[in-house]
Amino acid sequence: MTVKAIRVHKCGGPDQLVYEDVTLPPPGTGEVRVRHHAMGLNYIDVYFRSGAYPAATMPFTPGNEGAGEVLAVGDGVSGFKPGDRVAYVSSPGSYAEERNVAASALVHLPADIPYETAAGMMLKGLTAEYLLHRTYPVKKGDTILVQAAAGGVGLILCQWANAIGATVIGTVGSADKAELAKKHGAHHTILYREEDFAARVKTITDGKLCNVVYDGVGAATFPASLDCLRPFGVFASFGAASGTIPAFDIGLLAKKGSLFATRPTLFTFLADRAILESMAARLFAAVSAGAVTIPVTARYPLAKAAEAHRALESRSTTGSVIFVP
Image 1 (cartoon, rainbow, N blue to C red):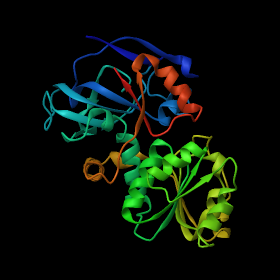
Image 2 (cartoon, one colour; image 1 turned 30 degrees about the vertical axis):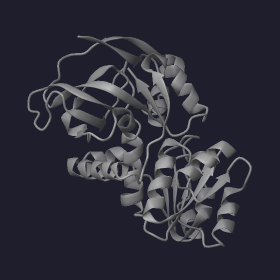
Image 3 (tube, rainbow, N blue to C red; image 1 turned 90 degrees about the vertical axis):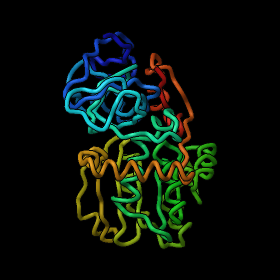
Image 4 (tube, rainbow, N blue to C red; image 1 turned 180 degrees about the vertical axis):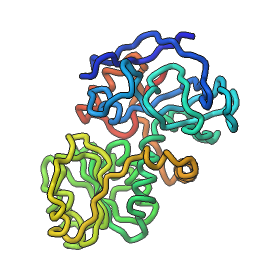
């Protein structure tokens, strides 16, 4: 059958996102056919589109998360049936009306969580889950710094850490973004374009600094992020929106207080089905309880994927941006 999808035939800028017909085969062994109700936009999509992350094949359909309804299941699939509400984070392919996705990547979506919310939170929310609960388990009384606190992951980190009982400091690029971050749990905000954020963190904390820095910005905030950490603090890098962090002398971590630095990836966690189910259950519970809300701030028709990518790369977006078929 034929469905509409975004295809990338050559890596490059947003103009390489082509809206066209593609042939979708029946689901193979271990696969499930999903009709998307909504799909999420994430910075990893930019990395694949630009070629920073190599695609497995060319051309390819970008997009790593979606939510929708099961249409059909392939051989060997158990636990899913036509009509089930599902959500997922998987290999690229979600920028399409329908797709086949590995059943091992799917989770059942609770009835009280809308499709658009799910599409806006699967990658970002599960990223926040592994950062807050597995990379550095935040506890009541901790002080944390969230770089790009008004972004999709940032707003979830702020809310969730606040609910745990941590003091949350967030960096943002504008006064409007500062207000948004505060509405979503940040106790203190720093305008990083106007202020020395490391110096402000020191002032805010009376020199005690932070237990952990969650940094999805990359080159623009390194190594200053390390100056925000108390001895034995954790620098958790999970993205590079401003460019990758250059190679550095590991001795720098010793000089700045016997620090820990890590670069975990979501897909390492998701490779274990039991961990995926545990992470999704914790995320869904937090959303259902109201501890975390998912601000879907923009919706684009799938055909306007290039426009959405331009907005994301210009840092003019906040919260979660989704596509609708």
